[in-house]
Image (cartoon, rainbow, N blue to C red; front, side, top):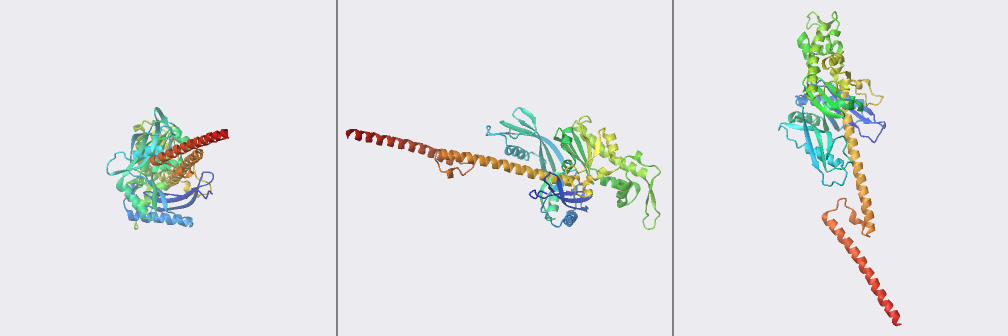
Length: 467
């Protein structure tokens, strides 16, 4: 294991569960899972924290279970997933004109371009969660994916901006902070899930990630390596459970158990002569539930969710010909039997289940490969992406400073100036003027010394002639 790599923790605050996973990349770039804990969630509905006290208790319970799996862990900062029907997105365009056109485009220019987008005007009740560059433009060149190192006067980009309700975000922050943790970053859940279940070929081919959680279904669409669209559909596994509870007249716990054990997303696949026996309440006679009826209830709600997916795909012009990678189903709700067939029938696009084992090293427990942990694993990957980008920027900055210092040191020796005058990386105007004055004085002194030598030599020659 690479001991120099940091330990990063992903915290998934969901409607039905709260999960905490700690991981570190090994020397092969794979995630070694160092700790795992989960707890039932009671204070969250449709991805939004509605009861802070209950959410705090659930977060602490998940952390305790994570510590129990590895007592040597020390967790202070976490990456947190965010979802909910309050999440919105918009497209913007930004440009900057560079002052130093001779220098290459650097990460500093890109950071300035991104930071300017946080000034975008949005409703007062909302807050910008993330700014994601899509395509860059350098002068007249378009569709550039990596502009660093290029030359140009004007640098621009198209951006996908994700926003959320300020109060909803504040409730998440309070819940995490009162649990004794610090939030390093908030990440949209479908983007985290996408990082966990997708590979480079998926990004290029064009895919739609459909993350079916407990309270919401999150959608992220990628095409030619670019995030094209995000959306939050306000229905999830919890709605299916409530439909079963109300439609069949059973308890919520019984409805959840039936959904998991006997649920079918396609009613045609369920046996018409199969029945589930439910114990009666307080001495009442047992109740028999038709597996076919159960499947009809599940299919109705899942079909509605997939209709929303189709609607969003049509909104951005992504028909089935453009999604060569198809639809990737993940999240706890993706485990329903025959959901792939229902998805393909409803959308006309090929579908598969996305498991978060694409980036995991061997040796982890089997439970972590279930789709319901895709968001948590993706949060760790997001943390490592930030860490590697920061380290790369520091290394580039160090090389620039070191190169600049060596060049200045050599120039100082050329004019016989003291090296101390080159200590500052960015000299002020006064320092530059002072340096030029020193250079002029040094040149003048050299000239006068030469003249003095010539005059002395001339008088010496005259004296020699008289003798």
